[in-house]
Image 1 (tube, helix red, strand yellow):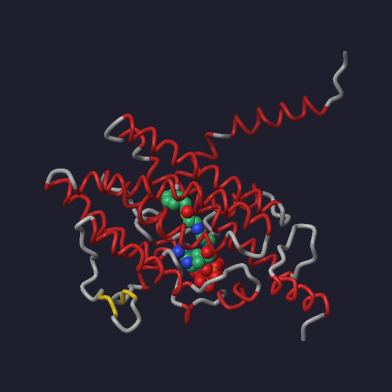
Image 2 (image 1 turned 90 degrees about the vertical axis):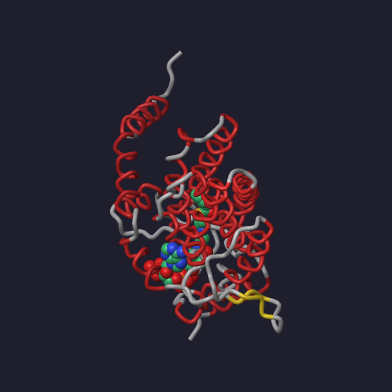
Length: 311
Ligand code: FAQ
């Protein structure tokens, strides 16, 4: 039985109002946001690692500048999202310690290695492409601080997406070896990218309630299909092939029909047993340790500023 407050809250959601931090909200709404936004923030933060490795290995000064800017953008996205968490009463240090302790989730995709320069392009083209499909609707979600963070984030993600496509385009127009490198990277990244959208709707415990609250606007399968429909023609345009022998355009629906996704791999990766899970967490723990002196200096500076200044 819903209380009067809950009914009034749902009416605001259905009317399209934005919910702001000072507004009353059901406990479940707050905890769902904390779960999703922290997972999102950690994804941006851990997401810097696969590409970060390539900053010192980029093939030209131009590519290096682009990659450096992209990786810095991801750090900024994590900061906006940790701020959105703080607006719900969760301290960013608390959220961060959950990540370092291995208790928090972040996207499956960041537990795969970027083996060649072409993988950097695939991350931009496919992973950022998937992120845009997922996040543009989130920018119309019901919680104000999260939705507003998404507007800026999506603008930056579209630059990331284009630079990834451009990097792959240059490779496929290059030597046979470069074209092969692009195809092999596509083979590695295609399936994990389809998993980014989350489990199938029938196995997604949170989707229904999250959609009722306007935290998610579309189901996992709907967004996955949108990504497939928009990306397959781009793959064909570049003369690459999708590593899915069952993929075909269904003339009845006008949608590309994909072959079966290996959900056991997805579960393994998100439970900590992907190729790079341990490595990713250890890298973040090491950064936290190395940043200790910065945190101490900032705290010391803040304490000095708090003492009234004598003329
Ligand atoms: N990976 O019931 P649902 C970027 C978990 S990064 C890992 O469907 P929900 C920057 C889920 O948490 C993009 N875990 O859950 C970049 C839940 O576990 P729990 C960042 C996953 O929340 C690009 C369980 O499975 N974007 O842009 C995944 O309704 C390139 C049941 O699932 C976001 O993070 C997964 N893929 O829907 C940086 C999107 N999927 O909590 C560098 C924000 C599901 O019960 C390079 N998040 N799980 O233990 C969302 O939109 C949603 O949370 C979903 C999942 C769609 C991911």
